[in-house]
Each structure stands twice: as structure tokens, then as C-alpha cells.
Length: 55
Image 1 (cartoon, one colour):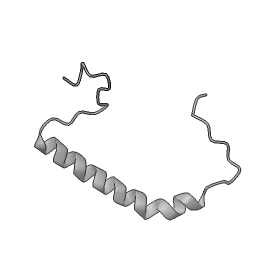
Image 2 (cartoon, rainbow, N blue to C red):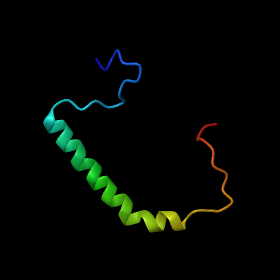
Image 3 (cartoon, rainbow, N blue to C red):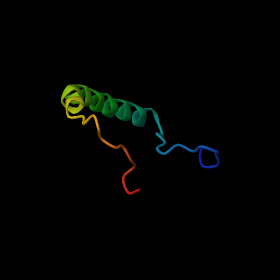
């Protein structure tokens, strides 16, 4: 079972309908990301220090 797995899923879709809804959501998110990709990339600061939030 997934609960006993060494690497359990963060999200576990149960049933074909759940997978279908999840795929629709991910497709919509991907389209939104691509729509705003150029603007997001253009805001990059070349000397930025990348570090995890909170430490």
C-alpha cells in the first residue's frame, strides 16, 4: 500500500474521475504558466541570491 511505501505520494488520486479532474487542473495551470512565462522570466534579477524561504 502507498501508506507503507518508502516514498508515499504527497497526493494520491483515487479513481478514474479523480485522475481526469487532476489532469484538467494541471493542463489549465500549465497553460497559465506558459501565458505568463515571458513576463516572469523578464523580472529575473541577475545578481539575486537564491535561498530557501525561512532559512
